[in-house]
Length: 287
Ligand SMILES: [Zn+2]
Ligand SMILES: [Zn+2]
Image 1 (cartoon, rainbow, N blue to C red):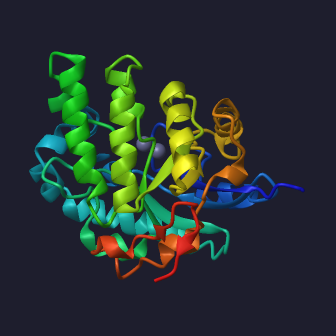
Image 2: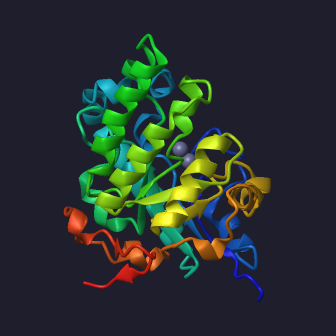
C-alpha cells in the first residue's frame, strides 16, 4: 500500500532569526505534496515577545522572571497577530496556524491567553530552565525536570509536548533514566496530551526510541514534526522513520491524531477533559 505523506506538526519561519530568511508560510505552502501532506506553522511564543531584546531572549531569564513577559505583552501580541495573519492570509487548506509555546516557572504560557483559541495546534516545549541547569547532580536535575514536566502536562491549553526529552538530554549529556521516561509516559497517558516524534537531528536517539516502544504499546497519541529551520529540513522525515525502525515499529503501529482532533479543542482548551481520549489500543474514544 502506498503510504500517505505525513502532516508536519512542527515548522518554523523567518520570524525566528535562527531560520533561513526564505522560510515563509508561502514557501511551506509550495512544498505541500506527497512527502508532506499538510503543515502546521509553529513559531516560538518567546520569539514574538522577546525578539526585540536578544540578550534577555537567549538568557532564558524570562522563564524565571515572568514579569519580563508582562512588560513585552503589547509588542509580543502585535508580533503574534502579524504572524497568525501571515498564515491565514494564504487561505491554504493544508497550512495551519499553531504555536510552539513555553510554560514559564509561574505556570503561564509565553503567549497571551487571548490568542489560545486562535491556534489550530498548541505545542509546548522546554527550551530554557536556568534554575534546573544550576543544580549540581544529574539526579537532581532529572528530578527537577520531572516536576516541571508534570506541571506542563497538566496545563490544559497544551495539545502536544514537543521534543519531550531533548532539553534534559542536553543538560545531562544524553543520560535519561528508564524511570524518568516511564513516569513521563504514564502522566502523558493520564493527561491525554500528545507527544511529538521530532525529526530534527538535535533530538536524543535512545530516549526517543525507548519512548516510541512504550507509546506504541499503550496507544498514546503521537504527532510528527520536522522542527524545520532550513529549507532542506521542511519535508525531511527521514530521522523519524529511522527512529521508528530502530524501535522495531512502522507508522501503522502508532496512533497519530490529525489537525482536526486539536482544532476540536478550540473554545474548550481550559479543560483537560477536552483532550482526545484514547483506549488502550489507540482508538480515539468519542465522548
Ligand atoms: Zn522547540
Ligand atoms: Zn521548534
